[in-house]
Image (cartoon, rainbow, N blue to C red):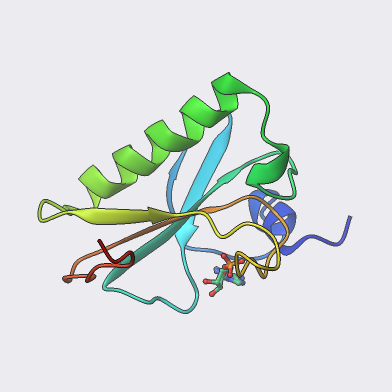
Length: 111
Ligand code: AMP
């Protein structure tokens, strides 16, 4: 399968890994949008959040994201983003969670 994040998970494409466990891998985004910008992916291919049915994997991804935020020292807060599908702005078709922080991120949704 020609999936760039599968190749990163397999070590075929270099990445700056910050965390991994049995199910997940976290590495720095190549075009960071904040001082800390890490992507958390499942090691096995899943195109997007749309196809996520395994609560164990969902928990592993969220737990990894929280662990990354703590390890990055994002004490002031952070944001988790999962762009999903074309309307959601997803460009890489392998489920990934963006962990962003290290500066005030502003509000995304108006109240
Ligand atoms: P999305 O728009 O949610 O699909 O985001 C895809 C993200 O993957 C973007 O923020 C890219 O900068 C990032 N990205 C693409 N290729 C790589 C790579 N080789 N290593 C790290 N991040 C990447």
